[in-house]
Image (cartoon, rainbow, N blue to C red; front, side):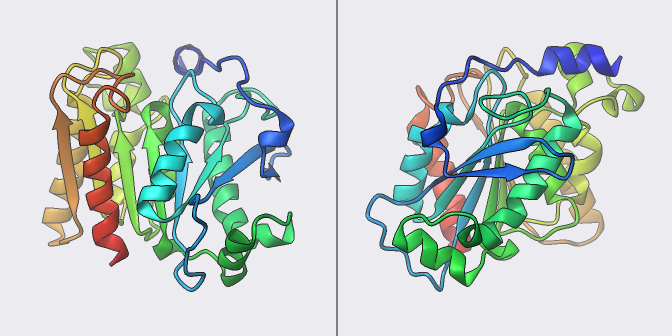
Length: 273
């Protein structure tokens, strides 16, 4: 069963970038090599004493090149450095696509943000930022579609500046078997629904109402699970769900860009104050 869901979930596209587009190469604990692209503001005028990062986990049928232009907009407008990376078997990353590969890469990237200056010299501003060291409470996580899986897993029991989930899945099984509400099947692949309640950071969830790949009710389930958990513990940590009327899975960042971006900008800006 796990192999069936994984096959449906992972569809790496043809690689859209070259070696020279990569900022650094990261080796995971299991030995695969992962490309890392750091995208900083064009003006490069960040205060190195206030280092902010957005760790970006892209969607399916994408590689890091698919997000680099959007990442530049985020970097310029939000004044932070966006860390793009690829999953095992995507782009120039070695290995084969699998769920545990998503986790190991996200964890490795969390560490590399702290010590990237030891790996490769980059532009002066970014060098100053990394010399001061990335901190968990200055890192935002972003996960789109299948990228919500490593994002939720990484955010469990850690306090980040904030977590953004876009078109997230409740579980891989519920994508493949839309009528399923089995907690057993939910644990086969991408068990966001059972894990999201352990996210300790402020949480923003965005989803298009007309999503034909991962229906909007996936995000409603996630938001309710977190809200119920936090209410039971009298935890005031924010969880916000915004649905974007008319948006589908693959046009939420383009056709509906302004609304999508404004929600994220407001969420991040409020937490950088």
